[in-house]
Length: 263
DNA sequence: TTTGTCATACCCCACTAATG
DNA sequence: CATTAGTGGGGTATGACAAA
Image 1: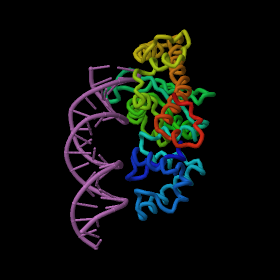
Image 2 (image 1 turned 180 degrees about the vertical axis):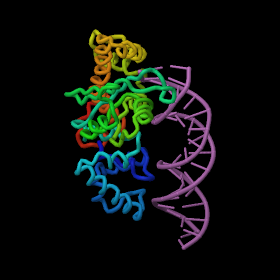
Image 3 (image 1 turned 90 degrees about the horizontal axis):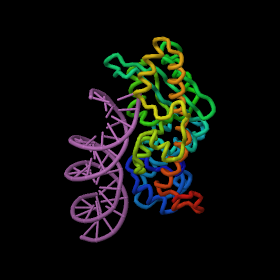
Image 4 (image 1 turned 45 degrees about the vertical axis):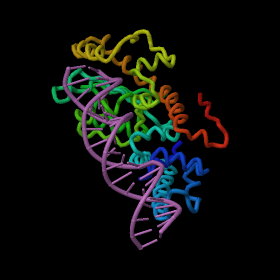
């Protein structure tokens, strides 16, 4: 999808991007090879050519951070296919307070589809540790992380750094007119949680931390399991939502073979 | 080259919905 | 609850193209 993207160029929105596709220019290489494009003046094309060449070099060099900066936030999802193999899902639990009132993250969970890492407050949760783990990946996946998890971590863990492309599934779902929180989406797409944490919500996680903090080992284990389940379903959900977003973008209408399976 | 017209990208605002 | 980013609506600014 990223090779088909032109909406990040200044002055090109969704409409113009589709017009470019309609004219037969489907990829960055097509664009660079075309001597002239209708609706785009020569000096402007020259500027676009430069930017596309830079993006292409970044993609060839797997420079995810450059591309994160080059794309508008709402279009980061377009990088998913390119970086799926090096994507990490993140979800946090907190003690229930806001950073300004003594709030802190209790658990930060990372899951890449194979391995799960859990950073726990007072044990191994530090900005350095989190940065080190994130550094091994090319893309970040969250559910409403842009609105909650990321700002919360930035406010409570000085030095933590988020520069990766960020696929926020919550806003993708909203743009697709799929409403409801993470749990609701899991049900909609037939994902079933481990019985021990079924029906739990974020508030329960707050209470579990209270007990875990006082030495309740069982509560601690349940809290970690809950967080792990939260992160474990993000990647399969991303797969589903990415396909739907791609279909909604309209690119499949212009590709020679419609291998999209849009419904 | 200048002007007029049209399309559309962009900006600002209040609102929404999700998080623990 | 309080908090937050993204969204959508509506107005404005900008750029492409064609006619003069």
